[in-house]
Image (cartoon, one colour):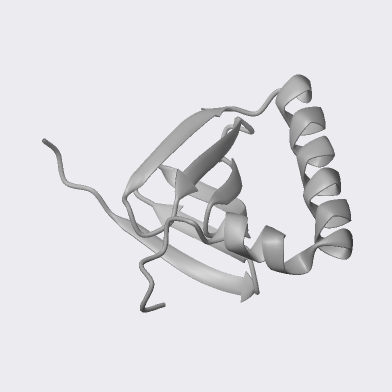
Length: 98
């Protein structure tokens, strides 16, 4: 294993500038989903379950972006109709003491 360096600077809530020994990148998102644009222009999306350390990272394509927009729209619509059900579904992984 080699030496790693990473520093994150918060610009706005949910917007970060990332500094590392290989370059500078920008991240947008929060717990559970983050979009990162690297110093080479490569766009990646990371989806994870907060608090578990488990995540999945893939290159961001047009298909994935459209799917995410549709998913967010559906969750937003469901929240307007049944907010308690959506909150419960989004926090299913949390222990009961949270």
